[in-house]
Length: 336
Image (tube, rainbow, N blue to C red):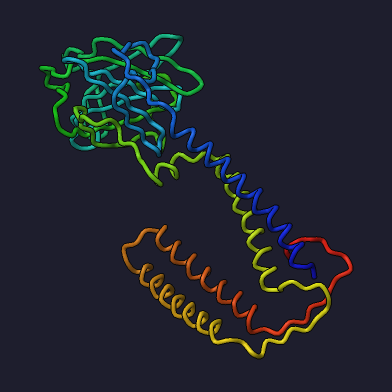
């Protein structure tokens, strides 16, 4: 068995390395979240390149990775669409049931040329070009590009239109449908997970919602940061084990038998208090399983239950268990 000093020496090394890793990751996360805000551009250039600051609003669907950008200038609205695939991408406005009644804009890029079709949802499961209905298109300008990041489409149209099939953009929430595929045409059906529905007020004064506080840090954390955080926590855990082990075993320089018959009342009282606290925590955890609580709340309660239990075991081991301590010829200076 190694001595207390050697255990503490190893424990301090693990502690400082763990803290250094976590502080470096924290500094990296702070630097990312303190990046200066993007300056709003004076206008939208419909060229297929969605630039930072070009649009005032942004909708992102986490499941499909579809992006919709928009900006209102005067009596016109500008849209930008982005899909992770290299085929057609579409948005539909004002749908009543599935696709029925929707004002649909579907576009793709092929051979360096952008193709856009304005369509109308004639049934819940189909749509037809406005030209086939004898209606005039409302899009005034459009452009797109395809690159390694997927398909980008931009188009411009009036806010108000006098058409039976195209929708005017009003100051209220509209049903918005979106979809995309990996085929550069107007006919290929989208795959599973390549479509969705949401509700947007395009006149909303606030920009796309941006999380803050702890939720922001959790949502923005990168995979490499998670890996380093795990290593940092592991180093801290080893340091904790080293310190607790040294405290329980004490400073021993030669073989000795330690009897713990005459223990003061204070440790016993602390154990009783911790036992009561643990029972209350266990009861709270059981109640949380059958009530409307979040997974994080239940996980926190479970962690507290085991933390208090571990503290009780350490205290009982330190104050009430007799020890037979034997020295080893070789000291590997590890906390176990």
